[in-house]
Image 1 (cartoon, rainbow, N blue to C red):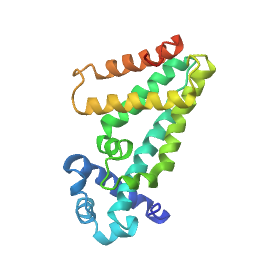
Image 2: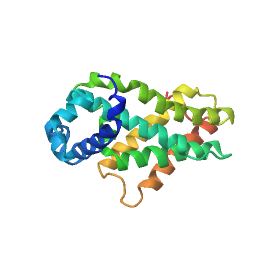
Image 3: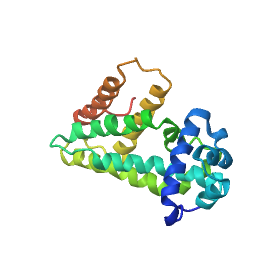
Image 4: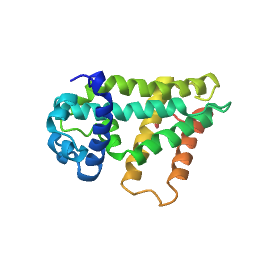
Length: 203
């Protein structure tokens, strides 16, 4: 399926933005190449030239999701407070991404695809985005804030909490107007729990 050809990158960006709008407002079933061409004011042939198939378009959207996450976490300032920096990665990067790009969150992060196997096609972009989070967790580990837990475990636990909070917020189940505070409180509690060594198996 591969990436769009270089000389089509500008066209691809426009088409991906329109494809995201369709997925968000009309659902993935409505995201056909013909409908995308109509919305973008171009021809079906042009869409096929860039992507080749609907499956390749979905892969490109999944890749776009993680490219946004990677760029956002790389742009987030780093301070002397490793714990706060980790929490902000969740609140300012993951939450903002999910709220501003819900269709990409569902498609890329939650892998709600017609063919789940398509996710393997954007796994490289997903891994690159996860590296940004892992780097912040490594800083927390170096500061002695993980209570002996491995960076690998904390990376996936932190990501899982962010994904869960995003899914709940997108279902409008968090208290209106309190969403950011709830995220920050939950992530802060998790990070403080690591530092205190209070996260351990039950039983």
